[in-house]
Amino acid sequence: MKKENLLVFDIDGTLLDSENVHQTGFVNALHSIGVEFVNTDWEHYTHLTDSFIAKENYERDVNRGFSKQMLQKFEAAFLEEIKNCQVTEIAGANTFLQYIINETNYAVCFATGSMLLPAKLKLDRAGIEYDQALLEASNTYFTREEIVNAAIAKAKTYFNVTNFNFKRVISLGDGIWDVKTANNLGIEFVGIGSNNKEKLQLSGAKHHFTDFTVFDMSLL
Image (cartoon, rainbow, N blue to C red; front, top):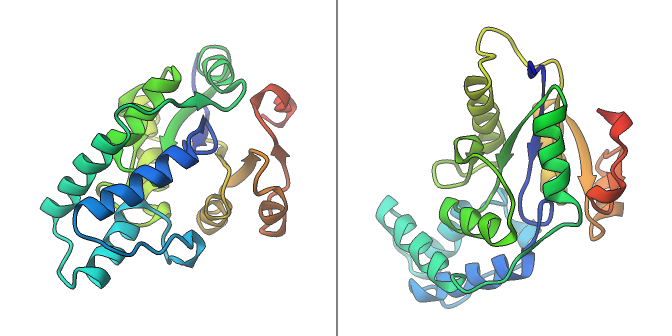
């Protein structure tokens, strides 16, 4: 089936019930590379991505530049911290995802503020079926906008739509940063999850569902 439209999925809190695992592993990984104090007021940061927040905390606390090699060391430490984690999907996530892939004219891609290797581990632990070629993480980019744009570009190549744009691009996310990114990029947004419903609506989210079992397919 020709893919004319695109769904961009956030991962933590959207496809996966993994925020506690992610945040605990993230903070512990920063401690392991020498950061004593981690500011966990996540909405304080200019960009809510692992790479940017790690850089901000490392450079402030260690008073040294956050090199590419240090980013790789941080990612390895993060992966080690969560290697035994138990992660479950948001209700209905994999069934919804496979239906979109196999039965609709929507392509899919994945744009996460997480580091790549931890993101892949969490998806695998939850049993989410996905293609790694469609996953963009924060290893290369500090901003959510860059990550989403890169994921869209990967989808265009993967689904051979390089000579035209998708008719519709809809971002699915659970955080205030997700809806802000969609607004900044001029793409549609649908909120997922129960934690930030009011904040998402105040930021302009017109549609919101607690999980994928109650998703209104007429929106697509």
